[in-house]
Every structure is written in C-alpha cells, then in structure tokens.
Image 1 (cartoon, rainbow, N blue to C red):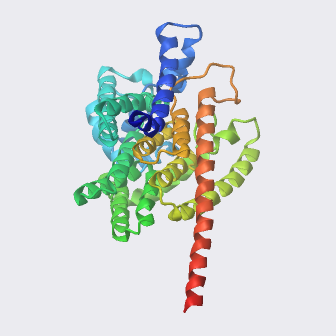
Image 2: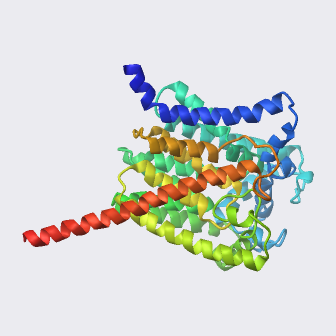
Length: 424
C-alpha cells in the first residue's frame, strides 16, 4: 500500500523524467549508430554548428574597446544589450581574443576556442549545481534531473551559441529557490541574483511580481532598487557613461524592428505568424501588431488574476510562459527559462493531474530530439514546432485558469463586502 502511494506521489516526476529520457535517446541513438538521416539531429544547432559560439565571441568583440553602443561593425542594431553584458564581455575578451577575431567563426584561434569552451563549462557547472541543490529528494533523483535538464534542446543549443542567457536562467532559478526561504541572507542573495538575471536579459524581472502577490512590499522595493543598480550603473564602466543611454535605446529599437520579422526556429507568439505562410512585410506587421495587442491584454488580465491563485507552481508557470511567449525577438534559446519552471514543478507537493500534464508539456518544450523531415510547419524544424505548440498549450491553459481565478476572486470579494454591509 505504501509503495502504491509513493508511486502515485512520484507519478509527475516519472512522467517528466521518462519523456525527457526518451527524447534524449531518440537524439543519441541515430547519431551513435549512424542511422540513415542521423544528420538531421545536428540541425539542433544554428547553421548546423557552422557559427560556433558566435553570440559569445561577437559580444566580446564588440566589448573589447568598452564602447559597444557606437561601434558600427555589423550594424548598431547588434549592440542592444544592457551594459552589464558588455562590461562582463569586455573583461572576458582580455582572456579570450588573442588572434584578431573579426566577427567570423573562421577567424577563431586556439585560445579563442579554449576560452569559449572553458567559459561555457563554468556556466554548465553553475547551472548543474543550481539544479542539484534545487531538486528535492534522493541523490539519484538530483543526478537524473541534472543530466536530463542539461541535455535539453534549448540548453545544448545555447551552449553551442555561447549565449549569455545562462546568467539569466541561473539567476532566475536561484531567486525561485530562495525567495521563500526562512534565511534572510539567502532571500537577499536571491533578490540580487534576480536583479543580475534581469540586467542581462530584461524579462526575468517579471518574476519579481511573486513578491507583490505575497504583499512583501519592502522586499519588492529592494528588488526594484537592485534591478535599477545592475541595469544602469554598468554604463559608468563604458565609454560615454550615461550619455550612451540614448544611443542604446536607439539600437534597441532598431534591433526590435529588425528581428520582429525573423521566422524559422524561434520561440513565442510570432512563431505561428511568421512560419505559417509567406506574406508581405506589411501583412506580417499588421498581424503581429494585432496579435501583440491580444497577447498583452491576456498577459495583464492573467497577472492580475494570479493574485487570487494560492498554488505557487501555477503562478511561476504563468510568469515563465509569459517570458517565453511575449517578447518580439525571442530566439529558440529563450525556452531555457522552462528549466527553472520544471524544477519548481518537480518540487511542488501538488500531485494532481494538471501539474503532471504541465510537466509533460514542459518536457516537449525542452526536448532534444529533432523530428525528421518533411517539415510540418513551413520554414521551422518540426521539433521547434512541437516545442512552440506545447508552450502555446501551457500558456493558454495557465492564462485561462488565472483569468478565471481573477473573476471568481473578485466576485467572492464583492459578495463578502455586501454581506458585511447588510450585517452592519
């Protein structure tokens, strides 16, 4: 009887681990045994890996002179990050760029390759430590979680790109694992790490609303202060200081205008607009503008409705799906944010059907396997289509539940107020 209860309790864990392991094996076996069409699995990587760690090397290249926002190499639109990225990569470039890297993977020398591999190894190790420390239960469960979550499609893709989103994912996870801690110092560390995460990629700042839901106003205010400091103080370490802010904003707008029409293997609401068929630029922009208005309205209503939700995992899943769905220029690596969400759901004591279904969908969002051609969905890889479909189902389900909770919560509050008036 006890074993049956334990099995029921762990069902969601078994399903997530089982699906994740299956997708990993479906990726590994064709490659290992050189099965026909195995090369399709390597299409996980951008340009089949022919642009090795370009995100990292390019940012280091732009940052070498500590004046990125005015550097015209590859266009100003490519210099749209918050300043902390350029300060960090400016320092990192001193340890990596020895052979005159010029923005092309073909110019990489031995030291550049070694530097990139060592850096990403540290990032992987840090993420592994966070997952291991964050997963509750036996050592075996922790180890399996580390292996499977580091073997996900978005994670492997991000390693090959060398993208700095690792900082944001790690910072977000530390915050989610500590913001309810009884240890005040640990909570404060989590707030600082979330501020760092937001300073690198912006959207992790949305997780701060979890403090608002719990009416922890002072801590929310401190988090805002930390966020402002990490977002803007690094300007002082770049040439021009705060005077570079207008140029940064201009670069950011140009970046958004350019990447808003990027189709292919991306993430978010635009995936289904840009990949479904070929249209003119004007038609695309009209559909995107209309869709964006709907998505933003749903996001606001959902965030308000989540105030009435008691289950933490639903709130976390709502915010994380919004982080992956709503940005205009989300790349495939943005699905990395599903990793901290998966850790939170795996740890939650809720063992109902909906958290199990949510974890199964997260396993699809994160899957490593590349589904063979022919393509189902116009320009995008089949696996990316499946990942975005699973994300859309998660987004739609959790938003619908949040809005419903908001409506019923407001009705309940209104009824209680009327009752008090009658009694008085």
